[in-house]
Image (tube, rainbow, N blue to C red; front, side, top):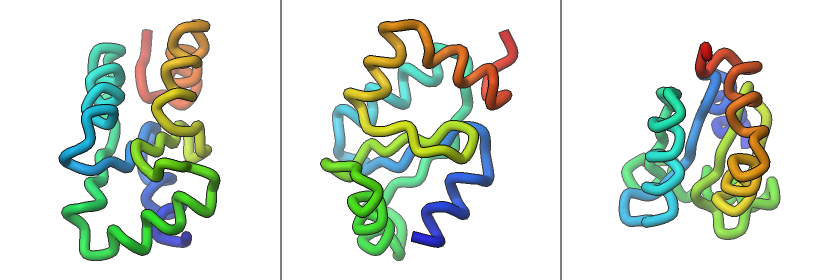
Amino acid sequence: MDRVRELASKKAAVIFTKSSCCMCYSIKTLFYELGASPAIHELDQDPYGREMERALRGLGCDPSVPAVFIGGRFVGSSKDVISLHVDGSLKQMLMDAKAIWF
């Protein structure tokens, strides 16, 4: 859990993913299209990946990826991020966290 929190707080936008996950790819693409450059942590490529995956599940993220943090705060998984984008609040959250500037 500590590793997840530490990594999540190092950048304004952080996404925990797996390289083979299509929804992870979609969320990363959405962030890039909004102008953000999130830190991406591929759990299947990280030696602590399984430990971090368990920690993400402990936060309520099921499935464990994608798991999105903005401003160090856990936002949720793909359905949560898409809902925030549809209602217009995702962009504002990214601006408030200084992940984007417009």
